[in-house]
Image (cartoon, rainbow, N blue to C red; front, side, top):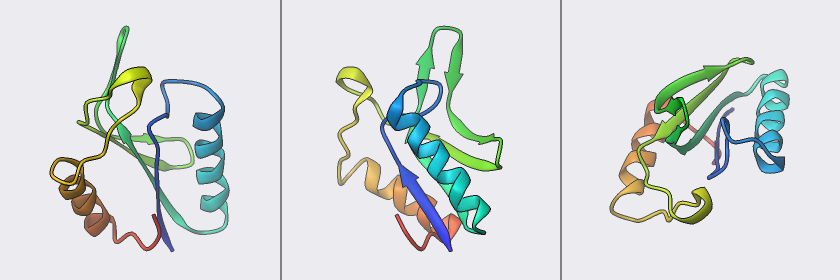
Length: 97
């Protein structure tokens, strides 16, 4: 099964939600599922995360060009984010979001 995990919080930011999403993705991979993670792009000190990256596992991560608001939270919009997410879901043949 192809699974997409979507979260405002992910690497390079570290914390409980970030580690939970990564651990869940690793466990799902071990069970034979294809897993991708979708989050917004990060522009931290000395580290710019945009585009598609691969983490150990292998876990494919989409760092989408979505502008975060307060505390790295994103407001998904019907006009801006839905077409981008739909493109990714079709491209990756996602079954479960």
